[in-house]
Image (cartoon, rainbow, N blue to C red; front, side, top):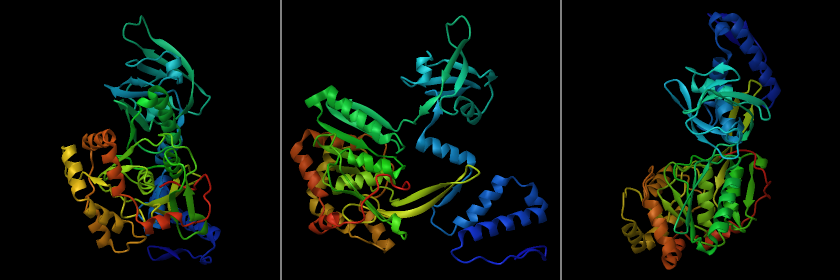
Length: 449
């Protein structure tokens, strides 16, 4: 029953509890009747109506289930799946579009565009004074479509005209530095190209350095996560066998066990994983898998603790509903949600002193192993207990070089690395849980954490 100012607007019979189509039709009928009865609703932007409706429907679920309107969903899809573009980064200075970077081998680079070029027109339309959103919408577009840019360049006799065909562009998520045979890969997030990009950088480093490659530092600090499938592929790049992660939910199709079956592209070299309080979701899958499989030493602070998987449903208005689908279980059997990953070497509150930090941990090894054993219990329903465990290495945002310096010292000292690796080695009970079986994994998981 829907009323307005005490008067009945519409009365409908409620569908059955499991009648999805019936409830959808009921909602549409009520919405239409409400707009006809209310001048305010009738004149309201439909996007605002959708947002109010879905916020009401989803508010009783968890905080990660949400609605994104068409514009927000478009940005989300571009981050996850890439977009049609020309391969540039730019900034807006005094209303002028200035190219800050030209990606190699992309259309802009092939057309001769250079850093500090000023883009004045797209397809004959001036850009000066437009918002970043409007400019982005003009430069981007469907792949294999043509775009014409007018460009001003310092020292050129006049404007340059560049024609190019848009290609599929992925946002860069893997950044590489190398010093003294130690490869540092910083993963900013997990999109459709992350594992492929990381594999290529590992292979190139191996080819370039050969036996000079001494170790890998995987920097996941500040990484909010992304696609579940990509986190599994990233872990699989460094594991040859064994469980990577399990998912468990109420629906039978949400229960899966994802196993490694790849080649260790680091070829058994020391691996150090850096995490902090902003490392979440897919980043936690990678850190937990490598730690539980005795493949890496985790350094930093307790991670965020977002251990749930969301599935994304595209709507007819090009918006999206994100619904929590399942919970993540680390190889040793503990739930990541609300707990996160506990580093073997904790840097909470520290600003410098890599050697002192390592010595402090090694001097108190029994306490660290005790905490990690308690951490890996299959279920810790008591929130106070979880919080107490997390306070053993408080979650913090880390941006300094301490974690990287600790990683370098462990790579330099193989005996010390072995001791640090042993700190987080799972107990026999946890190892037994690693061998427990669940339904075989599909190679393409349904959602993203």
